[in-house]
Image (cartoon, rainbow, N blue to C red; front, side, top):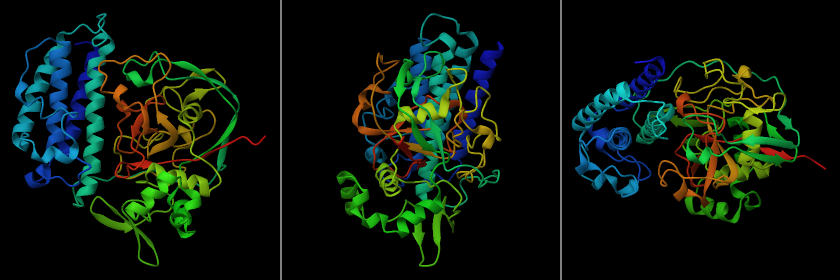
Length: 430
């Protein structure tokens, strides 16, 4: 096996270790639905194996199905999450046996496959990147489910670097064009392609994500009770849900508290705010006299190098996201303090654009000019339109294998259980 295949094998092993770690729990916790927003954990576990079987074994290698009778159970489009507890899904022990059997065959395929084959699935190991990123995304979903379960002691924590106060509140991005998206990143998804030139006027963008202290000031100033700051849809959401804080926050009349993976703790005011929906982010931005950045503004501030006139894979360049550059890969079960990664700044000086929290943008999820579905329409194409808002950057729970400056996430504007935050922008004053 050559070096590239060995790296792919290592990524496959690492992501599977992660999936198994998040499902080392009592059977009742694994099969129970902790929220209608989420699947039972054991459904996610077998789903990643079924997806791997479909794409690596059947599509790329032409191998006969291992368990064709379970395909409909694990087809995410056939049964909404709220209804999945009624499915005859595999129990924890059987799910582990199934995914282990699939993985053994996948490693055999990797050993003999030609990664220089002209087939788009084979070339540069795309199909392996597809299943690795897919599993990491479900691992992040599992973490969101574990947070909703309210059970303590299931998710490991870790140490993070300290924050710092030094630095401007905003950074300026001058007017001009940049190359958005990618044609060259081997494992990029279809919605990141093709690369295309975008011209933008000058704008300011927050150097850091909005923090808990700033967001608490919005709450304390009556931000949730003033319809001036909310869109009509957002105000309807606010009234119908009764929300008055980010998800998992509470105030005892003296201090702010949050519940994080089953434990209640004081809210660290120097962390990026987390678990806010798009409507909340948009309302805060209006209250602050700003707005949410468009996804083009976000990507330019994050990944464009105006000196070399090229796009960077990460804000700081091409180097892998080590622990001094970004909070990714579940190094700790929370965002890092604001200002913790000066070495991870973009060419424009924006910090913590990758890792910590997914950042809401002001954009709807639309295709780029010249978009072509690959390898299936249900990954991106069926979601395009004015229903889903774009998120960028990746959270502390996202793995580096599934994060880059061009990566596009999307969700309904009401979603709060995911690890979401935001930063603000404003147009250049004329």
